[in-house]
Every structure is written in C-alpha cells, then in structure tokens.
Length: 422
Image (cartoon, helix red, strand yellow):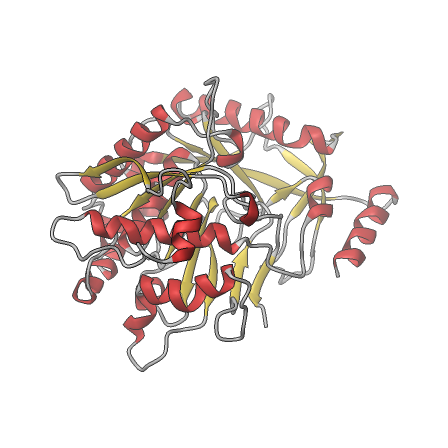
C-alpha cells in the first residue's frame, strides 16, 4: 500500500489534472497562562487582501465520505506554487498575520493549523509532498522501550504522595536498566512538586541506553488518582472540562512544567511544529506524561507548551475556546498520544478525545475498572512489548493517529492509521 501511494503521489506531481482547493483553519495558543476559555483562538487564514487563503493541491482521499485517514497535500498557496520546504513556513506566517490582526500577538508564538472547508465536521492534516511520501501506512512505528519509560515515570510519581505505598518496580531489572543512572544506581530526581490544589509532579532525568535505542530524556510526570475508589474523580473531569472548576490545578501543573523547562529547555525535536523553541545554548529531550488524572494534567500542560506528551488512560481533555462553540471543531493535539486499554471507563465515558490514541486489549475479568489501572497495564502490555514479546493479548488493537502527529518520544515515523490494526 505504501509503495502504491508513493507512485500515485509521484504521478500526480507531474500530471496536468486540475488541483483541488481548500482553506486553512488557524489556531493560536496563548504564550502565558490563561483559563481554557481564553487559551486558544481560531480563525480562517486570510491573505494580505483580507480574502480567505486558498490551498491548492490534492486530498489523499477525495471521496465524498472520506472522514478518516485523509489529509491535504499542498502544492500551491493562493495559486502560487510552493515547494515542500516552503509550505509550513509560509502557512505559519499567514496564520501569524491573521491571528495578530484579529486578536493580539499573545497568540502567535504557538500556532497550528488544519485544512478544512467547514467550521464543523472534520479538519485534516496539512502535509507537504515530501512528508506524505514518508508516511508509514502499514504498521505502527512505536518504540515500546520509550513508552515503558514514560509508564514507569507515571507509576513512580504515585509513590511521592505522603503515605503512599512503596514504588512497585524498584527492584525490577527492566526498570533499573531503562531508568536508573548506570554509575550511581539511583533514579535521578530533578524535582518534586506538591501543589495546594493537590497536583503532584516529579521530573526525572533518565540516561541514554544505547543498547535499547534510548536517548537521555527529561520526563515530567503528574500523579493520577490513587485508588480504585477514586476512579469517579476522573469521570468528574468531564464536567470540570466544561465548567473550568479545575483552573487552580491547571495553574500549578503549568508552573511546575515551566519551572523544569527553565532549567532544562526543550529541544526542537521535543516540541510540536509551530510552537516557539528555546534559544538556549543547551537544550534537552523533554517529555510530559502521567496516568489517569495525571494524564489529563499532562495533556493540559502539553497543549500550553507544545512539549511531546505520552500518557496513559487519560479522560478526554477538550479545550473549548467559546462555550457557544462547544460542538464546533476544536484544535487537535498533534503532540499527544494517549495509550488506553479497551473498556477503560474513564477514557470511554469522558467525551470526545482530541488527541491521538492507541488502544490495547482490555484487562481480564468482568470489572471494567481493571482496564484503568496502570500496574497491570505495565506488566501485561508494555513490558512484554518492550521486551519483544508481542502476542494477540498485548498488541495494539485500535490505533487513531494522524500523519501530522509529532514524531519523537516513542513514535519513530509519520503514521496514518485510523481503526482496527489486526
């Protein structure tokens, strides 16, 4: 399939067929803390003549019902041909001009955009021809050593709460290999955080492990709910997401993230396209993670900062820029991948997800809450996959990842999979 599509793109690049056209929906994320209803501004891109900016190119699938696995390959902007190297710089500039004129310069440091003909329905990735040729359409290019690292960090942060049980994986050989400093034999904790509203966070510097294809990383992890009786707290996040009753929580998570980024600035590879990169002389691989409520918290921080975010069992985190637009299109989170087990009540009962998702087989037993817990997720799914022991019982069952998803932090290639994988 990948070879066939490559040939198709090559043929279209040189034929004389008329190009398709569409428009550009721009989103700007405020460059300082703001409540969710004031965090994101959106607008159709306009040109210097204040006319809607027109994208010329072709759809991956231009059938009337193509609502999944679709994207738009840009060949010209307002009828002016552009190369693959020019596409994103031109579109980012056009969105910046549009947003600063319509709102303010507070929304132009962090920009993303999508191709669409309508403010409701679907918005699609904007791709260059070069990127479209690089998409892996056939398999899931995930490095589970990375994902297991993030799950370990998401599990470890639970042990930082006062009175918590000891960390489950301290003596686990895989944990020690992936997470601990080889010389000291210790986990390198950069900082811990406990906020007045209940936010718990930890930042861990993990070493490069060449034998596992792992680089040095700064992992910022947020704590989720602590017991099975607290699962309802996660479900209540659906209401908090609409009523903004959790703003103190968001502020504290944002401040802790910024504290770590000030000390360890994220490199370009750790940020999704369109977010402002640090100009520091030394930068780092940085990842945000968490489980359950901690995943919800990490996603919120990830949208605000653009840092690559890999989470587990997160409820929906849908940021609405105006309540009257609750059912209109919302910005998709290109930097976020949420890993979930099937039948997880928190993930499935909390509304529409705007992040990329990977589903794994459900936990054994009749209680769906068992699919929400992190320790069996690690033991039954992630650790076997990281050790090359893939089976039908642990392989991803459904994948929803768009081709504009940021590569890095365990995603090794551009991928375009939307649905069942087996």
